Image 1 (cartoon, rainbow, N blue to C red):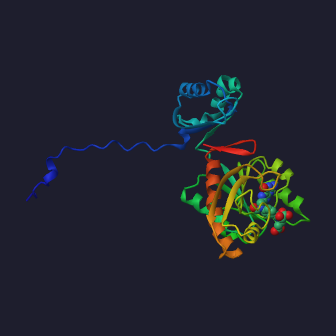
Image 2: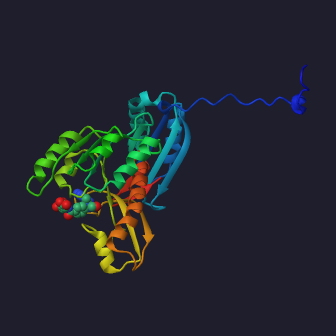
Image 3: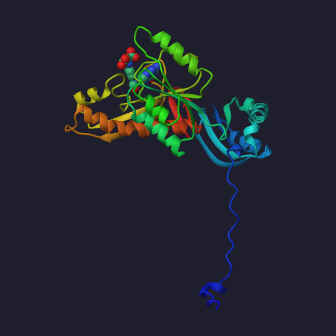
Amino acid sequence: MVPDQPAFADAPLVTTAPAAEPVRPHDIGRLTIQCADQPGIVAAVAGFLAEHGANITELGQFSTDSENGEFFQRTVFHCENVADRLAELDGDFAAQVGRRFGMTYTFTSAASPKRVAIMVSKYDHCLLELLWRNKRGDLDMDITLVISNHEDLRADAESFGVPFVHIPVSRANKAEAEARQLELLAGNVDLVVMARYMQILSAEFLSAVGCPVINIHHSFLPAFAGAGPYLKAKERGVKLIGATAHYATANLDEGPIIEQDVVRVSHRESVAELERRGAEVERSVLARAVQWHCEDRVMTYGNSTTIL
Ligand SMILES: Nc1nc2c(c(=O)[nH]1)N[C@@H](CN(C=O)c1ccc(C(=O)N[C@@H](CCC(=O)O)C(=O)O)cc1)CN2
């Protein structure tokens, strides 16, 4: 007995489009550009990409001034096998566009996540935030190493499958410790993140490491730079505390700011409570700053950043 056909049997057959091909990271490229602002830049870049078979899927740009300003642009484009064509694109772009406009530019591929080393001391919250977001696929980067001046966070790093190297640091051995850190880092990573690493990096280290260094400072800079910002905040009786992610330079806590945030506090919070409330802000601020850097969104100009 064939059951009655359901009422919708004569309804028009709805055909669904074939599942879209998954976007291959090998076909997604990014181009970041910085130069003196002038007419013709956007047309020249768009024309170059079109001539090379690239389809622009995302475009951000900014000029600091309508005249004599600085121009910034970030383009995301689809281009078959761009991951294998970066050198070709780079050379052609230099000849056809880059030199003409005096550009500083970079071609990158989504198929090559940035190699990131994380430096920590004893605080775990920023490290765990980065490891957890990376594991979940929310923060695309290749965490290659954790370096610490203490043993406390070894199990945390290794539980995520990330190698952990303990390099003790003291006032007496700082130069030797930095030499050992550089042996592991220089030429092997694209970014170093200080996730509450409580040591001041020397100017020599910053010069030799060969890549940007991002630090999370546990205050709303420029307030309370240096050590012990939460105690300073309590003593000052502030009603907002915050965190600042910035590029580290030889000038302590004065490097270009990438991201900041704040949270309201009151006379009721002790220093310990300020530290607890502040940790929530630190971890999210650092994660956003690292993500924007890894997505090639952050461009520095003097001591400022433009984020596209
Ligand atoms: N070259 C830079 N290094 C660091 C920066 C920076 O902007 N440039 N930011 C600091 C900020 N910071 C924490 O966020 C921090 C500031 C000062 C100190 C400090 O005085 N450390 C002492 C040692 C303390 C100890 O042994 O426990 C020191 O280095 O002599 C620490 C952290 C991070 N580094």
